[in-house]
Amino acid sequence: MTLSKFAYYSGLFVGAVCTRLEAKNRKLYIMTLGVLAAYRGRGIGTKLIQSVLDYAKEEERIDEIYLHVQTNNHDAMHFYESRFDFIRGEKIENYYRRIDPPDCYILYKMQK
Image (cartoon, rainbow, N blue to C red; front, side, top):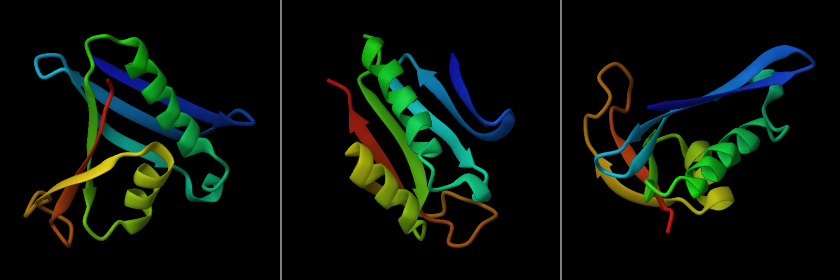
């Protein structure tokens, strides 16, 4: 099962978040979050992630939410860690194949 949310500003599509439920592991994986550059800093990404967290809170079958973040994406790590209390977990080397650096961190948040 997937959960996707879209953000509109004055009728214009400006952002989205897409997740995947891993029911076997009781985890919700945030696959993508994106907001058009001109609309960043207006709370749109925050509202998208908060809607995912609110959904997960209502779902008894979700124990953890997680995502991968490239090791040099300090803005994204700060966003998740400071606003939503995600925890920086293990570093995975060579996770990405076509971008540099290819390494990422797993960020996660326990639900219960």
